[in-house]
Image (cartoon, rainbow, N blue to C red; front, side, top):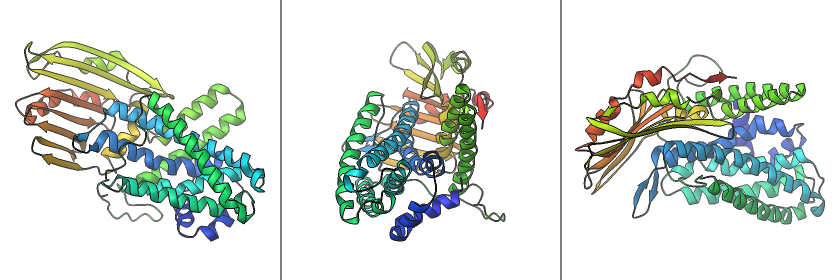
Length: 423
């Protein structure tokens, strides 16, 4: 996997599709090669934006304010979003292959996947600008329209259908793709996801410094992070190939898990902390309030794990605080993106209070305060893996900050690599 080659291909198919489609059609490739060498990378763009929008920055709801999904729920929905988007691409490719004879084309699964993947490039890339407030719908429509143009242009080359039948081929494919998207959307909603939400917020600026090494991006830049991620994906794909050849089902399952972990940016499989290891981080008292109840759990989905410990603290009257500590497990790569080279920042204010997300001391911080109800929320991300969040009634946001500061952050930081199985 060559990240520079991927970028060059995406640029070429978007800017010079008439000359690029013949090149694409003539290239020898495999289904696995297309996924590991292109689709897994590009399809991750809207997934990352989805996570940043719904859980890190928040979704702006007209007349109601900003809505922010719980971090663990947002991470889980992002995994489902990502995996099912990959499934969707493959299903649409199967449909393109099956329809080929109807429109005078030749059935070929690899060529069908090429047609779908490179046509989808427009939507994947357009999703980047879709997080800018007000541009979500415009970006989606632009990606869809240009994607239709790319597919119509590419079908005669990939599926060898007569050019005059390409438009009908494209229309039928789009109808089938819409049906697939609806079905997958229903699946996501049943699993508690938030499909399509939050495509209306922006990433902050990227900070970079000049690096003298030839052929690499500046340390700390978004491109450098993406390049490192692509290298991990390449290593993971080699493990999958080797496992498939071995015929060992356990090795195959483990290799796929490693690839999913690499795709999510965690570097491999991560076993989140067991409940008995995360629960001790819940103190007996918080801001002078006694702990009235507590719980800890570890849940898995699609081979990923998330652990969570929660507690309620109260004075028995009207003063109550809720504490939540989340171990994002294999999903920590998305958290690392937001806290690291994602450069996330957001701030809003109205008559009742404010909400903002920013970096402080290398940590991603989110705070929200309602001066009318004298309540709020304050949370930090520790070690690009653990989320510590306190919400409830308080005299000021400083009280919530003090409550979070009383949690054993250094102890959590020391556990950031526990359970990590590198590729």
